[in-house]
Structures are given as C-alpha cells and as structure tokens.
Image (cartoon, rainbow, N blue to C red):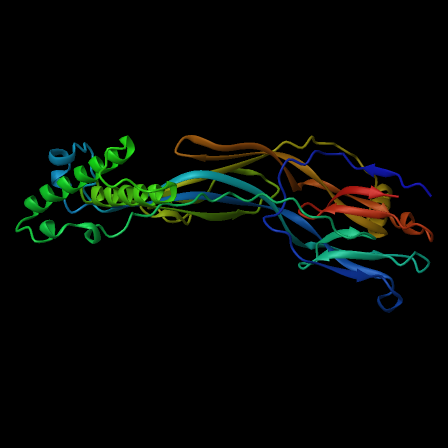
Length: 359
C-alpha cells in the first residue's frame, strides 16, 4: 500500500520548542489496560532567558601613574562589578494541564496501537516513534580572564624599589624594553633571533603575555563572564499588560520581580486569535461534548503578540502560539481501526497540536 503524508497546517508555529528534549515512554494499548492510554495536553508557558555579561574590574597598583608613564587615558580607578544584558531568548515551553487529561481508547481489533508520552505525561506520538525535537538555546560566549600575577614578571630592581612611584617607573621601563625586543625580532635586528617558526611563536607569545600582564598594573584588569537567567510566565485567558516578570540591576544582575534594586522587565501578551461567535443549541453542545469524549483530543492554539521591554527599549516583539487562547478538536476513534496499516500521528509536544498524520 502506498503511504500518503498529510501535513496539518491549520496554523503556523512561530516559537521554537523545548529547551532540551525530554525522555519519552512507549505505552502499549493492550487488553490489560482495556486498550486505553491516559495522556495530558499541555498549556503554554513562556521561558524568558536572559544572557548576562558580568565584568569584574580591578584597579592596577600603579593606576595613578598610568597617564604619566604609559599614556593610558582611562585606567580602572576602582574595583567594581558591572552586569549588562546582552541577549534574550523566549521559548514556548508546554507544561501539563491538569484540567486536560484524556484517555486514548482504541478498539480491540486495532493493530498493536501504542502511544509515546513525555515523562510528564504529555502526548508526543501515536503509533510512531518520536522525532528529534527542535531546540533553541542561547549561545554563551567565552569569557575573559586577567593575564596572571604581574609580580611574577617584575625585575629584581623593581621588586627592591623603595617607593611605589619608583617601582612604577621601573616597571614602565620593563614594558618599553619588552616592546623594543618585540620590534627587534620583527625586524630581524635582535641579537638572538629564534631559530625556527615554533621558537619564534613561543618567544613572541611570552613577550606579549609579559607586556599585557605588566600593563595591567597601570591600566587595571577585566574579568568577563557570561551566564543565563530565566523567568517563567504562564498566560491566562485575559492576556498580559506590561507585567513585571523580573528586574535587572547593573550591580546585581537579574533579580526577582519584587526586588526594587533592579529596573523592571515588562512582558505583554495580546490575544490576536480571531473570535468566532457561535450560537449552539443544547443539542449541539451535547454532540460536541460527546465528540470530545470519544476520540483523541488535541489542541488548536491561538495567536498572540508577545513583547518584552526594558528601559524603554523593546527587547522582543514576536507572534507566538498560545494554547490558552485556542480551542480543541478531536481525531475520531474509527481512524485507528485499520487492522493492516495503523495511522501514525505526530504532535508538537509543547503545544499538544497535531504536527503530521501519516496514513
């Protein structure tokens, strides 16, 4: 029999799914469990992740002499820590909805039906092995550390100097001496030239390291680290109007929403799902209720505009899918009665929506 693929494209999914793929469990619908498998549908939560740069400044011992001896205009003059907000990521992370648990009830004659569930019970596939989940993770850059202990490179004369001013003068001379040595090697005028390319690299790297380390005695040093911090937001049916989801402080970095030491980070969510007015009779409502109780219920998410703001700047402005703003529909049970070729159903686990049906 030829296999035909049907793509369910009733809505376009605009948010990357999952920070990391969860493990799944295969549950067979067999006589022992009355050919039924209990599953949950998710509701939408948003995980807002900040990429933060933490810079630790340390003043150098000779910073008062930075301009006089080395011409450094803006040396570090005080020890301090500065946090800056570098990037933001928003992940649609479906969490189990305790009010939306159902049973997949197969008929006894169905061909070995089974369901894959996430560890939290959310449905992933029917009669099919799960596909790899798409992931979206903020890339954390490499940091920067100070060059090392500058006193390891001080000359004996500098170490024995009787005052800070004299010591600074002697260290500055060392730095100029290193620069002269590098220039002589580059121009081939050094008395003892490195014999080969490897030796050349070793010598130049060492000169550069010593110069940089000693210069930090005047200019100061910087240590740069990057880390992430996340806030979770669960929408309700009313929408969100500039909710303070967290705060950010230059001194402290990300802090909780109630910590007034930081500037507020606002999140807004506006429901953009078209409204459909339906006047259903009591009989129609009963039919709809019966339909949802006799098949595989799935979500049809709604649409929303999500905005994140900080210090009068828009950090994110995007269209997102929100289960809470959508509806539900059902795959009728007779779809799975085929005794020769079972229908395969793939879901978007973070939304509980159908991704693909293969017959």
